[in-house]
Image (cartoon, rainbow, N blue to C red):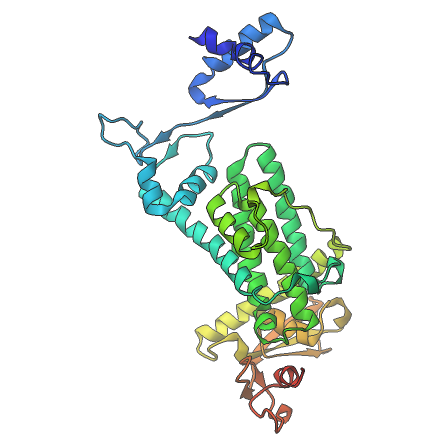
Length: 386
């Protein structure tokens, strides 16, 4: 038996007219190191000066929650169809693709609970993107990505990094690492940071404004890319999203190419700028959490940030941009030095004033107008823009 299977590269591949020798990949369980892999190598070495395969990939086996081999006599066999019926085909596929196949895979309820939660977070990212692109017209998008706002450039640079890393992992058959990269991007940079900061622009800016169009252009690029890179892991979900945004296209996303890397000029400078900004943001959030815990405030929008520095030009954002970035109601600069050992010091204080009924920021009473007395200056400008 082992001799017959060991010459399959010649008896089967050549007869079927499969070109290319040696074969790209031999794939089998870890029990075949002394079986098929070895017999194939020995017979090929006798006939040719090379191995019959370029790459050998071995995997473990599916076992029960206690690590025991599944067998009908033990009554611990799990039917994949039962899993599909309960969780869906994407969850079963994702469980396999996100697991380290080089070791045995334990099949348990807790594993599927974790996988389902991870899947839900990625699906929520899709839902947020779709919901905020409902009025987006690709014909009005910003074709040159270097004309986007810096925060939108930053998230696309991060997306580029993820695409490149995933491509490398998939080429090396490290599917679980590729999924981890995509999941972390969706859960961290995209949802926890980018979406959170951009909500004000998406919900409150004028729908034809440059800043909102910039955000939507970036989000459309992200959505198209995520559908492609996540298709191997959750194909049904990705196909559903693809058909929703490309109703005029009949072919499946499976026929699409891997996304191209977006070229963003001065990427290193943008990353360095945002490293500084995120350090400042971390300090702002830390102080806000302390104020909420002590019940001084109930939300971040009840605060303003005081920035102390003698070198304001090193901060690559203006006051309005910083307000959105920190998600606070005000930002003030002072050249007074609070900490001589630091170039920049941060202090978060409570903001007093009127709550805007549209965007919920706290603004000074002197900003009110007769047209919209309950709106801040920014929202008043938006409402007066046709």
